[in-house]
Image (cartoon, rainbow, N blue to C red):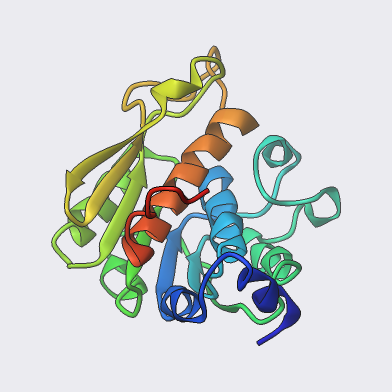
Amino acid sequence: MNTFEQGLLRYFTANMLAKIQSVKIGIAGAGGLGSNCAQLLVRSGFKKFKIVDFDCIDYSNLNRQFYFLHQVAKPKAPMLRENLRQINPDVEIDIVQTKIDENNINGLFGDCDVVVEAVDRAEFKKMIVEHYIASGKLLVAASGLAGWGDSDRIRVHKIKDNFYLVGDLTTASGPDCPPVAPCVNIAAAKQADVILNWVLGPIKKGGN
């Protein structure tokens, strides 16, 4: 157990941390949602991940994604792994640098307990949800988190016992409603919180 994990024992029992660290999380997309959800999960003790993303970091990503100026033009997935290791150097992260499509969706997250849908385009969101909703894995997706203001509109919607949808389900990004850090991070945090609650169960009354 490294010093970061020892620090977590101030907040979790050894059994709770062991439970968290036994779960493998698949993240589809390493952009605003995926990169921030991943870093919040690592900070919460999770250490087994599979990150699937084909894209490279652009200057326009730095307004909301967990990357840094010196990483621009580099591929997102390995750079995210590098950044997550700055939190916990012992994270175990499988990287798949590919675009998710109908030809590879079957095998991508078969070894994961949780699937985080964190892609941009509606048709790929739909494909991931349709494939994994009946898989028995926890599926956490997002829809409607662009813009700013009225951040209470970003809510967790329980669709099924193993399927949660985070967002306002309406506000898509566009020229008049761009994706910006506050609401994107709120949605990513809610995705991470759903996963932590699924693993540990609801917190007892009186907890902080």
